Length: 379
Image 1 (cartoon, rainbow, N blue to C red):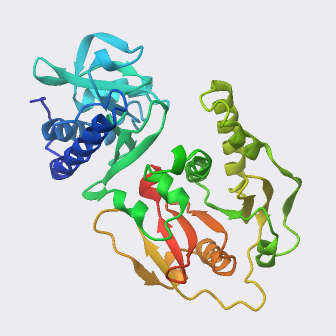
Image 2 (image 1 turned 90 degrees about the vertical axis):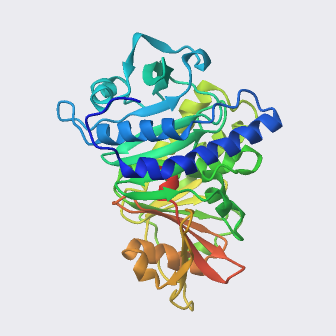
Image 3 (image 1 turned 90 degrees about the horizontal axis):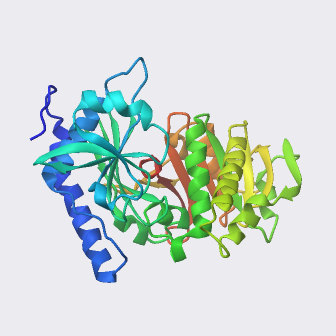
């Protein structure tokens, strides 16, 4: 066993069997479909040890900095162009904190594997096989278990641990009636690879990252009825609509792996998401044309105030509750719920300053605004 100076982290032991079962299921399915190297099924002891070490590391400081670490469980022989330490390091909180500054940039993982019976950190890697176990330290005491979904850079969250709170992502949530494509893609089940929907995923991640809160309205491109729910004029109207994001999305059919294309898409997503930090709502069509930002949402003339919102979170044990929209947060969430109540062919993405993120969509089956709490999928 790996030596430690800290007491054990109880949540690590509690979550390890469920994480093991998740990877066993996905690796078996990958082998059946012959999708290439399927990754390894992590043992419960390995899962517990990695989570335990990462948790205690997250509570330490190195020269005043909070450590940001990503750990990937795989042998160095299966990494692509790995950076190998001549002497593997012990998997211990103190060690992880010391090397954290070298690996805090996105996309760099510390590789972990057993060496002479003990888990050790063998080096770093940027690429890992599909369905590999990855653990990310998102904040002090906040850990996210992920699995690598494909040969690119996409990860799907498996579990979120924050102190003694454990959230296991419910993959079955994607099959719920009226589940928006954005939520389906976040759960790892985007249609056809989820290319266009994934742009909304990237926008959601970027909105949450700027930490200022904001609203993104996704409206139909074939009509202007949504304007009935917006105070005129829009504070920062864009004319003609900014179309670069939509053009980049359509280019994915030609060369989705192009590094230049990925950089351009990332820059454009960041620019559009940044507009949501301005007071008011940012308006984007479902063809990804930016119409304006700083828009004020108003109840459509003749429409009733929204009184009921169904709220769900895609985690195991979660149940739908129906609440008054004021229970969801402040005026931002109330405005987003009212907009979708009045414009049932639109989506509203609402980010809070505290990190909460809600996708509002109309549920035809239940004739109610459905608020999907998805921050556990965005970390």
